[in-house]
Amino acid sequence: ILQVGSGSGLAMVFALLTAAIIWNLGTWYLGLPASSSHTLVGSIIGVGLANQFLAPAGSATSGVDWSQATNLGLSLLISPLIGFGLSAILLVVMKFLVRKKELYEEPKGNQPPPLWIRAILIFTCTGVSFAHGSNDAQKSMGIITLSLAAYAAAADPGAGPPNLAVPAWVIVSCATAMGLGTASGGWRIMKTMGHKIIRLRPINGFAAESAAATVILVASYLKAPVSTTHVISASIMGV
Image 1 (cartoon, rainbow, N blue to C red):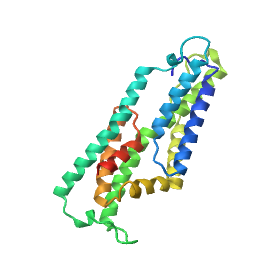
Image 2: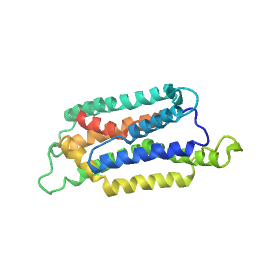
Image 3: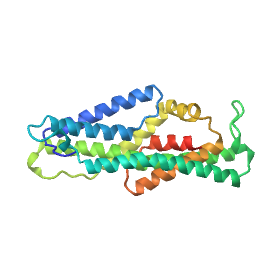
Image 4: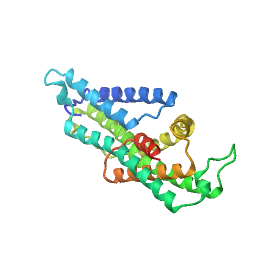
């Protein structure tokens, strides 16, 4: 966002967060796997355009750094395609190398898979969770830090550039909120991802989770924001 005055910073942060929360709650209620990353990016661009549109001078489009927006769009667009291709390749390779029939069978009734299969899937699922925190949680921490900076600028306009270091309590709060949100209501999305898109067998779950975790971790290393939801959805479709 460009052209942000100290007086409008808090209002802009409140507007973009409210819009993103409403959309995310709506898609969660319907059990739809929506991207929080796309929602945040869209909300940020929206308030940037609206802020400059209401300004006495300049055009609405001058409120957004379009070079940065383009880079974000490319990372959000390309990452699911990489996840799709990587999971498909990994599944084909594993079918040639791994012959354990239990990996290719659905559990019978309420009987759980063998312990060794559950251990493998817990390991890959943990990898996806870690990757998710390494990328998506950074966006939440950035928005909270932006709110703190906007408040500091509004409270003391002459204090100079605000401190943008992320406080420890923000990191802990974001990690706790993401964990509680997944534990309390994530089953709606899990049901859609694991049963409605495709009936996942252990081999499919292993390939999809491994590919998704790899793509997200590489993106985090490159400091590229990606959509965890889209990467995982594309990886599931790839298998």
